[in-house]
Image (cartoon, rainbow, N blue to C red):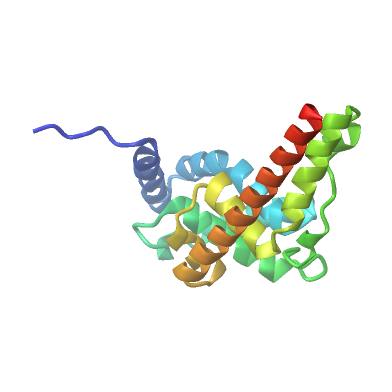
Length: 197
């Protein structure tokens, strides 16, 4: 009987789990591999939540130090990526007293340096449309879009991470995508109108 080969995500899950179990038994190298595998993703997620990059780096280090210190008390079977994201968020909540999670502040969109350098008129309009589209999203909607499409989390994992129901996450995701689609369609219609006139 044919057995399909595991998907990339299934293979990554199995590798992560093997590394997790190895580090729980005291293999420091296994924890190092997990750090190397997830440090950049964790930094991107943490920086999405807190504007201070040094605070994010410190929080990531603290998460891995705590993992090593408490390895004997950790669960044997976990989704490693989800566990690391949740641990980082908790650590940032504990340590980010002044620069608290910037979820509320995310409404104020700052254009990137690349966008500031855009000089062509059409590119300027595209940047303005993108900015407008993102401003239509709430901070929570932006976070859910980031977790779903850039960090590849499932709805259930996002719900657990954000302490929301799965239905609420689905609703927020649907609403965010609807806003983005509407904005993109309006931008396309305006662009076509400019070209054809």
